[in-house]
Image (tube, rainbow, N blue to C red; front, side):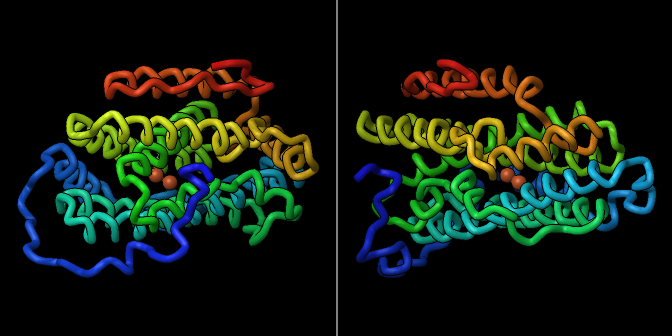
Length: 312
Ligand SMILES: [Fe+2]
Ligand SMILES: [Fe+2]
């Protein structure tokens, strides 16, 4: 079984004996502690800080609003899913006696993911109503994370590999998607939602790179290979399977076609989606940048293949 799909059957991190003290709350990783302070200062409230009353719903057709409801509901499901990984990682920081800067930052990171879920939900509501479940069950395979999140609870899974895959790969892709959406979305309320999320995601990504910069010099060759493998699986099997962007789904099933159609109509309306032709160069550049940055760690990502992007 591969590293990412192997879930320990007999022990989770909660089964490890508790050894809480001493608790060192001093600043150990300055860059991460500074992110915690920045995050604490930059809180925003999706209900108060977005001018919902000025949303011009009458400017859009029924079809456009219907597509946007679907696109933003899908996004809310992803953001809500992200909420579950934060506390699991946080438990590991505490149980493994990691630097307190990490746990402090992650408390706010969890809140920020909750805020993202809410802002997506509120925009779907503004368009006519949030949708609680995908209309087609096959959809679920497009947002499958192949056990990556469960790895957070597996004491044998390398924490650094998990952070590299979830943060330096998946959040880096998410950041670039939202930055792109912030630039191309013409509806002012949809754009404000995208910008709010983008501002938080900057810090989430920075966390991953700061933390890995601290840990990489202490990693041996075996650990570096595990990090490479975790990131490669995240890119090839999760991102290049439509996790953030429906056009990257590798199947041509009804759920994928439905999502792509919703994205196209929402994109044309300027309500906060994108399509293959607009996003492809951005996605390719993201993957290349991750590969370059990981070379500085002594990691070499493999080539990635996808029928729509070619080999990256
Ligand atoms: Fe998020
Ligand atoms: Fe995030």
